[in-house]
Amino acid sequence: MHANVGNILVQVIREPERMRTLVPKDWDDLVRLGRAADLLARLAYLVQRHDLWALIPAEVQRHLVSAQALVARQHRELGYELQEIDLALKGLGVPVVLLKGAAYVAAEQAAAQGRMVSDVDVLVPSGCLAQAEAALMLGGWTSRAKSDYDQRYYRTWMHELPPMVHIQRGTVLDVHHAIMPLSARVHPSSALLLAAARPVPGFACLQVLAPIDQVLHSATHLMHEGEFEQGLRGLVDLDALLQEHGTDPGFWPGLVARAVALELTRPLFYGLRYVQAILGTNVPAVVQAELVGAPGASPSRWVLRMMDGLFLRALSPAHELTSDRWTPLARGMLYLRGHWLRMPPGRLTLHLLRKLLPARQGV
Image (cartoon, rainbow, N blue to C red; front, side, top):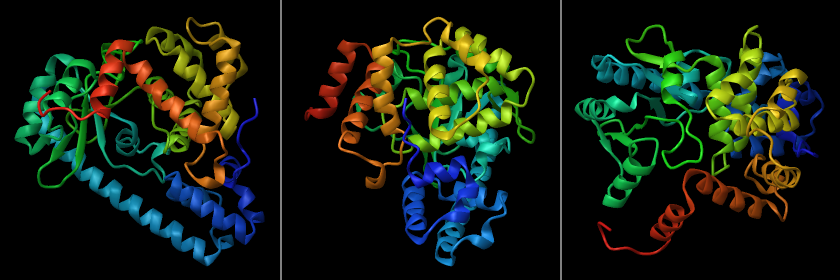
């Protein structure tokens, strides 16, 4: 497998000290790719962590400082939003588990450093979904799905309510009852995830997934996604989680067994394969061997060869500097794959036709 590690952004993420040798054209490419991948603020974090700020050209510093300011503002606004969500839902007496960026920021994890955040994603028990929605509506959130079809689509087939928007602040909240759609081919147990979740200090009901479950969710969200404009950012998240949690003595020995229990061996296989190939993340050989032998983890040789050709293109920044003649095709095929994994063929066909063709209101 030949990873696309030639672009300057990936090189710098893998080895920040390379910034000492960059020429003006490299800096220009780095800023362009960092912006396209939503990773400019992460670059700023790496610059500061490796004490390289004095070496950065002034015009590049301005871009990095601007990205840092934006992320700082997003994190402050997220902090307020989490307080409001906690206030709205604490009366239910159930765990409300933060997912992805909101979780990293709330728990002050390494993956939060320079991490852009926008929507908030939470996971609640399926049995209290209606109560959670009602409580959030009382708190000022309302459903963003306007058509009857979209309402039915989310509530019948998906793993979440239609996105909710706060009527005053305009913030978007996605309320999940599972991490995979009900119509998907695998069904990770939400009960297992919720049971292992850990509370976030300072909040009444907000929690985050256990470390292993965070890694599995990160890999699953990335590898089952149909749109990869922020694919490299997702890979950076996964790398940060593995580096942070991998220091726990129980993390690596328990990772594959937990993936088996949650039916997530295949996305973990792909996630570990590409985070190693692209970002050089260290994964113990014993874990790789254990995963290869786990049920459902390894694809056939020809499938793996095809997936390498697709993912190694799609996980690069969505920019002409990192695209070749096959990149649009790779992204298109992975978009279709994402839908294929979420729905059975018949339902998928009807859904795509419904989205592509004009339809009467309410159909």
